[in-house]
Image (cartoon, helix red, strand yellow):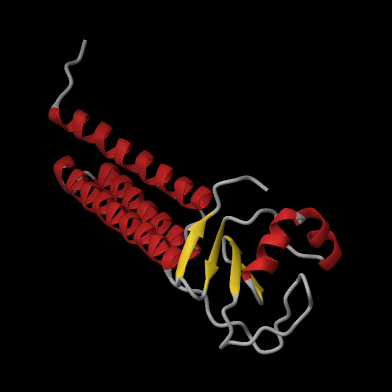
Length: 175
């Protein structure tokens, strides 16, 4: 039997880097990371594979160079993943934009003013404004009724924002 050389081991590790990069792409898709990060990581990964294959068939450079390039590509992928998840985390804690002009409360249909102590319900990027916290809680108690009545696109409320508190709160109970 042939013994494994260091070149074989480096090729195996390079392929593991590529598989992990594709795993990170799938993680981005399932976690709702911005599409620009998905395309960037996919492009960088495919570039690494392309360079590695060209190097393998041309035998112009030693296998160690290909491994070093794959390792650098994987470091770029890890850095991008870190940055993307940090951006998503920061976005979660940012206050929502003030209610657009003409926004109405889904419970009482009153216009919501920017200077009032309004509340906001959120599911992902979707925001729903309420003119008071009482109306928000009434909406949460009768969620399915208001959803059908007002044709609201939310499936569940993940967190709420109270302008007076200036913080997002995750909901602890299912709706």
